[in-house]
Length: 150
Length: 81
Image (cartoon, rainbow over the protein chains, first blue to last red):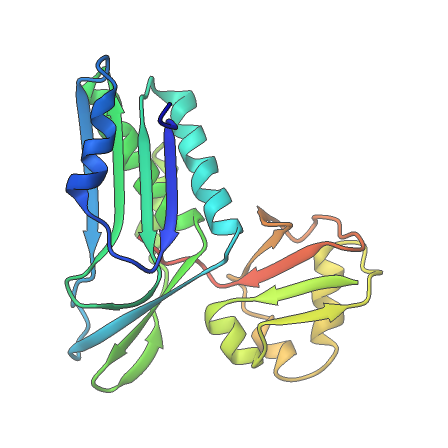
């Protein structure tokens, strides 16, 4: 039987199509919502690449906890959370969240909930390398505010 | 012993990713004080008010107790996603 939750922290890229395919095995779940995040270039100086650090062991546990919290709030089917680490170039994929449910509103809400908590609770850190050097990305107050609304 | 680990900008500021520290601190607040007492760069790096901590890979606050064999982590606010 396919596990209901799949969590991966990896260097390799992922395929939305492959991951979506995996969620189609549950006939009772007619709704699938996906979010994918990519490396964007908002730096004032041109971004060369980004390096993502994580806390091996805790990061996976934190993601599993967030998924479990989502499951207590909404009736959900299968959930996939994939987050990449290591060196990533502009426009590369960083994160993928896929949620299936019998109801679209539950799937939409759970996908947002998981991303909001991932951004302010899961131990990942971004370091940007621009043409002028490297710096750690600062956490945003808006990310913490996003968690408070749940 | 306590396994104390550091991540991201804090790891760079300290110049170390992990240290073994003698058990004895009653809680994380006390442990932080012991680490800071080593002088610089510890005192400045660990004084950052927004640092987060985790005990055995669970987020916690500074009042969390510490026991021999624990893994205690300190890190800046997270920026994934």
